[in-house]
Image: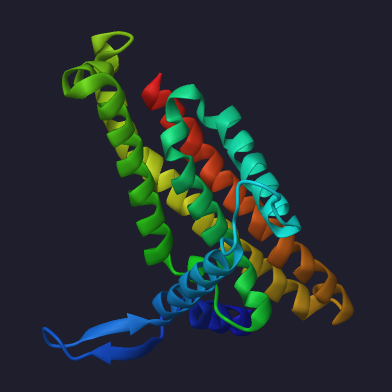
Length: 228
Protein backbone atom coordinates (compact mmCIF):
# COMPACT_ATOMS: atom_id res chain seq x y z
CA UNK A 1 0.00 0.00 0.00
CA UNK A 2 2.93 2.32 0.70
CA UNK A 3 4.09 1.73 -2.87
CA UNK A 4 0.65 2.69 -4.17
CA UNK A 5 0.65 5.93 -2.14
CA UNK A 6 4.16 6.73 -3.36
CA UNK A 7 3.23 6.12 -7.01
CA UNK A 8 0.05 8.15 -6.59
CA UNK A 9 1.94 11.12 -5.15
CA UNK A 10 4.46 10.93 -7.98
CA UNK A 11 1.60 10.88 -10.49
CA UNK A 12 -0.06 13.91 -8.91
CA UNK A 13 3.21 15.82 -8.68
CA UNK A 14 3.49 18.48 -11.41
CA UNK A 15 7.10 18.50 -12.59
CA UNK A 16 8.54 21.81 -13.76
CA UNK A 17 10.11 21.38 -17.20
CA UNK A 18 11.66 24.85 -17.38
CA UNK A 19 11.21 28.35 -15.97
CA UNK A 20 10.62 31.56 -17.89
CA UNK A 21 12.87 34.26 -16.32
CA UNK A 22 10.12 36.90 -15.98
CA UNK A 23 8.48 38.36 -12.87
CA UNK A 24 10.73 36.32 -10.61
CA UNK A 25 10.39 33.15 -12.68
CA UNK A 26 7.31 31.55 -14.26
CA UNK A 27 7.39 27.73 -13.93
CA UNK A 28 6.23 25.78 -16.98
CA UNK A 29 4.85 22.41 -15.91
CA UNK A 30 4.91 19.12 -17.78
CA UNK A 31 1.16 19.28 -18.42
CA UNK A 32 1.61 22.62 -20.21
CA UNK A 33 4.42 21.30 -22.40
CA UNK A 34 2.43 18.18 -23.32
CA UNK A 35 -0.56 20.42 -24.12
CA UNK A 36 1.68 22.48 -26.44
CA UNK A 37 2.74 19.24 -28.16
CA UNK A 38 -0.91 18.21 -28.62
CA UNK A 39 -1.77 21.65 -30.01
CA UNK A 40 1.17 21.50 -32.44
CA UNK A 41 0.13 18.04 -33.67
CA UNK A 42 -3.51 19.12 -34.15
CA UNK A 43 -2.42 22.29 -35.98
CA UNK A 44 -0.09 20.31 -38.24
CA UNK A 45 -2.84 17.79 -39.05
CA UNK A 46 -5.25 20.63 -39.85
CA UNK A 47 -2.75 22.21 -42.24
CA UNK A 48 -2.15 18.88 -43.96
CA UNK A 49 -5.80 17.86 -44.21
CA UNK A 50 -7.11 21.17 -45.60
CA UNK A 51 -4.55 21.43 -48.39
CA UNK A 52 -5.96 21.05 -51.89
CA UNK A 53 -9.64 21.36 -50.98
CA UNK A 54 -11.89 22.05 -53.96
CA UNK A 55 -15.58 22.40 -54.73
CA UNK A 56 -15.62 20.16 -57.81
CA UNK A 57 -14.10 16.68 -58.08
CA UNK A 58 -13.06 16.43 -54.41
CA UNK A 59 -10.34 13.98 -53.51
CA UNK A 60 -10.92 10.89 -51.40
CA UNK A 61 -9.18 12.62 -48.48
CA UNK A 62 -11.57 15.57 -48.75
CA UNK A 63 -14.63 13.31 -48.91
CA UNK A 64 -13.54 11.44 -45.77
CA UNK A 65 -12.76 14.73 -44.00
CA UNK A 66 -16.13 16.27 -44.91
CA UNK A 67 -17.92 13.10 -43.79
CA UNK A 68 -16.12 13.15 -40.43
CA UNK A 69 -16.90 16.85 -39.87
CA UNK A 70 -20.56 16.42 -40.86
CA UNK A 71 -20.91 13.44 -38.48
CA UNK A 72 -19.31 15.49 -35.70
CA UNK A 73 -21.66 18.40 -36.34
CA UNK A 74 -24.64 16.03 -36.51
CA UNK A 75 -23.77 14.54 -33.13
CA UNK A 76 -23.44 17.92 -31.44
CA UNK A 77 -26.57 19.34 -33.09
CA UNK A 78 -28.64 16.59 -31.46
CA UNK A 79 -27.07 17.44 -28.09
CA UNK A 80 -26.84 21.22 -28.16
CA UNK A 81 -30.03 22.09 -30.02
CA UNK A 82 -30.77 24.55 -32.80
CA UNK A 83 -29.79 27.63 -30.76
CA UNK A 84 -26.32 26.36 -29.92
CA UNK A 85 -24.87 25.58 -33.35
CA UNK A 86 -22.37 28.45 -33.06
CA UNK A 87 -20.66 26.64 -30.17
CA UNK A 88 -20.05 23.35 -31.96
CA UNK A 89 -16.45 24.25 -33.03
CA UNK A 90 -15.53 24.82 -29.38
CA UNK A 91 -17.06 21.53 -28.27
CA UNK A 92 -15.35 19.66 -31.11
CA UNK A 93 -11.97 21.22 -30.25
CA UNK A 94 -12.32 20.34 -26.56
CA UNK A 95 -13.40 16.78 -27.38
CA UNK A 96 -10.38 16.27 -29.66
CA UNK A 97 -8.00 17.77 -27.09
CA UNK A 98 -9.29 15.72 -24.13
CA UNK A 99 -9.38 12.55 -26.25
CA UNK A 100 -5.75 12.97 -27.34
CA UNK A 101 -4.70 14.10 -23.84
CA UNK A 102 -6.13 10.92 -22.31
CA UNK A 103 -4.57 8.68 -24.99
CA UNK A 104 -1.14 10.29 -25.01
CA UNK A 105 -0.11 8.16 -22.04
CA UNK A 106 0.23 5.26 -24.52
CA UNK A 107 3.19 7.15 -26.04
CA UNK A 108 4.95 7.56 -22.71
CA UNK A 109 3.76 11.09 -21.92
CA UNK A 110 1.96 12.04 -18.73
CA UNK A 111 -1.68 12.90 -19.64
CA UNK A 112 -2.35 16.60 -18.95
CA UNK A 113 -5.77 15.67 -17.55
CA UNK A 114 -4.00 14.17 -14.52
CA UNK A 115 -3.13 17.75 -13.55
CA UNK A 116 -5.95 19.38 -11.59
CA UNK A 117 -5.00 22.77 -13.05
CA UNK A 118 -5.82 21.53 -16.57
CA UNK A 119 -9.23 20.13 -15.66
CA UNK A 120 -10.08 23.30 -13.70
CA UNK A 121 -9.11 25.47 -16.70
CA UNK A 122 -11.26 23.36 -19.06
CA UNK A 123 -14.21 23.53 -16.67
CA UNK A 124 -13.89 27.31 -16.23
CA UNK A 125 -13.72 27.87 -20.00
CA UNK A 126 -16.85 25.78 -20.45
CA UNK A 127 -18.85 27.51 -17.72
CA UNK A 128 -17.88 30.97 -19.04
CA UNK A 129 -19.05 29.91 -22.50
CA UNK A 130 -22.29 28.50 -21.07
CA UNK A 131 -23.16 31.71 -19.23
CA UNK A 132 -22.07 33.85 -22.20
CA UNK A 133 -24.37 31.80 -24.43
CA UNK A 134 -27.24 32.55 -22.05
CA UNK A 135 -26.49 36.28 -22.10
CA UNK A 136 -26.18 36.27 -25.89
CA UNK A 137 -29.51 34.52 -26.35
CA UNK A 138 -31.62 36.20 -23.66
CA UNK A 139 -29.86 39.51 -23.18
CA UNK A 140 -28.37 40.65 -19.88
CA UNK A 141 -31.77 41.45 -18.37
CA UNK A 142 -33.31 38.16 -19.49
CA UNK A 143 -30.26 36.22 -18.27
CA UNK A 144 -30.54 37.80 -14.82
CA UNK A 145 -34.29 37.14 -14.72
CA UNK A 146 -33.67 33.46 -15.55
CA UNK A 147 -32.11 32.95 -12.11
CA UNK A 148 -35.54 33.54 -10.56
CA UNK A 149 -37.28 31.02 -12.81
CA UNK A 150 -39.58 29.17 -12.42
CA UNK A 151 -40.15 31.00 -9.11
CA UNK A 152 -38.11 33.52 -7.05
CA UNK A 153 -37.60 31.06 -4.19
CA UNK A 154 -35.10 29.05 -6.30
CA UNK A 155 -32.83 32.10 -6.84
CA UNK A 156 -30.11 30.94 -4.37
CA UNK A 157 -30.08 27.46 -5.90
CA UNK A 158 -29.73 28.80 -9.45
CA UNK A 159 -26.87 31.08 -8.39
CA UNK A 160 -25.16 28.22 -6.60
CA UNK A 161 -25.52 26.13 -9.76
CA UNK A 162 -23.06 28.46 -11.55
CA UNK A 163 -20.32 27.19 -9.23
CA UNK A 164 -21.56 23.60 -9.08
CA UNK A 165 -21.43 23.04 -12.86
CA UNK A 166 -17.68 23.74 -13.33
CA UNK A 167 -16.89 21.83 -10.15
CA UNK A 168 -18.76 18.76 -11.40
CA UNK A 169 -17.12 18.96 -14.84
CA UNK A 170 -13.67 19.34 -13.30
CA UNK A 171 -13.93 16.65 -10.64
CA UNK A 172 -15.63 14.14 -12.96
CA UNK A 173 -12.82 14.38 -15.53
CA UNK A 174 -9.98 14.50 -13.00
CA UNK A 175 -11.49 11.83 -10.74
CA UNK A 176 -12.06 9.30 -13.51
CA UNK A 177 -8.56 9.72 -14.93
CA UNK A 178 -7.02 9.44 -11.47
CA UNK A 179 -9.30 6.54 -10.51
CA UNK A 180 -8.18 4.51 -13.53
CA UNK A 181 -4.55 5.01 -12.44
CA UNK A 182 -5.30 3.75 -8.92
CA UNK A 183 -7.13 0.68 -10.25
CA UNK A 184 -4.23 -0.14 -12.59
CA UNK A 185 -1.72 0.12 -9.75
CA UNK A 186 -3.84 -2.20 -7.58
CA UNK A 187 -4.12 -4.72 -10.41
CA UNK A 188 -0.35 -4.72 -10.88
CA UNK A 189 0.04 -5.67 -7.22
CA UNK A 190 -2.36 -8.59 -7.06
CA UNK A 191 -2.54 -10.23 -10.51
CA UNK A 192 -0.06 -11.48 -13.14
CA UNK A 193 1.46 -8.92 -15.54
CA UNK A 194 -0.68 -9.99 -18.52
CA UNK A 195 -4.04 -9.02 -16.99
CA UNK A 196 -3.05 -5.40 -16.18
CA UNK A 197 -1.95 -5.00 -19.80
CA UNK A 198 -5.46 -6.00 -20.95
CA UNK A 199 -7.13 -3.62 -18.52
CA UNK A 200 -4.69 -0.90 -19.56
CA UNK A 201 -6.18 -1.02 -23.06
CA UNK A 202 -9.59 -0.34 -21.52
CA UNK A 203 -8.57 2.45 -19.16
CA UNK A 204 -6.09 4.17 -21.51
CA UNK A 205 -8.20 3.96 -24.67
CA UNK A 206 -11.90 3.31 -24.06
CA UNK A 207 -12.25 5.09 -20.72
CA UNK A 208 -10.16 8.03 -21.94
CA UNK A 209 -12.43 8.55 -24.94
CA UNK A 210 -15.53 8.11 -22.79
CA UNK A 211 -14.35 10.93 -20.49
CA UNK A 212 -13.89 13.23 -23.48
CA UNK A 213 -17.41 12.36 -24.62
CA UNK A 214 -18.96 12.91 -21.19
CA UNK A 215 -17.25 16.29 -20.73
CA UNK A 216 -18.42 17.78 -24.03
CA UNK A 217 -21.83 16.08 -23.77
CA UNK A 218 -22.55 17.73 -20.42
CA UNK A 219 -21.18 21.07 -21.65
CA UNK A 220 -23.47 20.80 -24.67
CA UNK A 221 -26.48 20.05 -22.47
CA UNK A 222 -25.69 23.05 -20.24
CA UNK A 223 -25.42 25.32 -23.31
CA UNK A 224 -28.74 23.99 -24.60
CA UNK A 225 -30.32 24.69 -21.23
CA UNK A 226 -28.88 28.23 -21.19
CA UNK A 227 -30.07 29.06 -24.72
CA UNK A 228 -33.60 27.65 -24.51
